[in-house]
Image 1 (cartoon, rainbow, N blue to C red):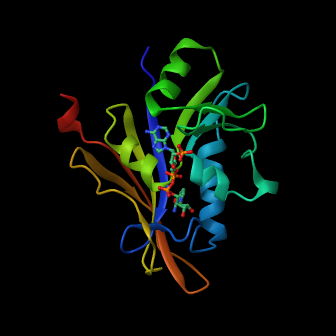
Image 2: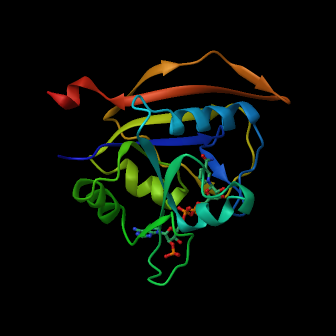
Length: 182
Ligand SMILES: NC(=O)c1ccc[n+]([C@@H]2O[C@H](COP(=O)([O-])OP(=O)(O)OC[C@H]3O[C@@H](n4cnc5c(N)ncnc54)[C@H](OP(=O)(O)O)[C@@H]3O)[C@@H](O)[C@H]2O)c1
């Protein structure tokens, strides 16, 4: 069985996703959306997994990590990187994904949640089937960016505009286009 996964990210008008190792905005509606998409399962006995780069893991406030009700997976090349017992560490995206095939982790869906380095790897991986993107209309002078969306993805869903504290954004979804599946 081959494991598929999705990417979830929020980006500004210049595809910016972060500044100085943190998120440049606070958008409660987007945080709720992120929580719901990454936490919801059809089977109540299963959890979803979230895969992130070491820098993104370190950017999460101590009182919010591991991200609750989800299997947290951190990618690092550091062989002695310390994380809480319930968190898994892998030295590549591929080994993390193979681990789902080899072990019964009771996981329903897998999400790659950033940051820029990991999105870049993930979006080129053929097992990446879906993108959940929050498109923010404003610009935040970011220094890390989401990669260009490959042509094999097509936009299939777009929410109404949401406005929060003067910031306008919408939720969009991309999937692999049908022409790529035939
Ligand atoms: N807007 C959003 O949706 C969103 C989401 C997540 C994060 N962010 C933002 O993105 C920024 C962080 O992104 P980033 O690109 O600097 O860091 P990152 O992707 O979170 O983490 C990079 C680290 O991941 C590890 N890594 C990278 N490639 C690897 C590979 N092939 N195999 C194993 N490990 C690998 C390395 O860790 P080692 O150095 O330990 O080896 C590397 O330093 C922050 O500003 C954060 O707030 C934004």
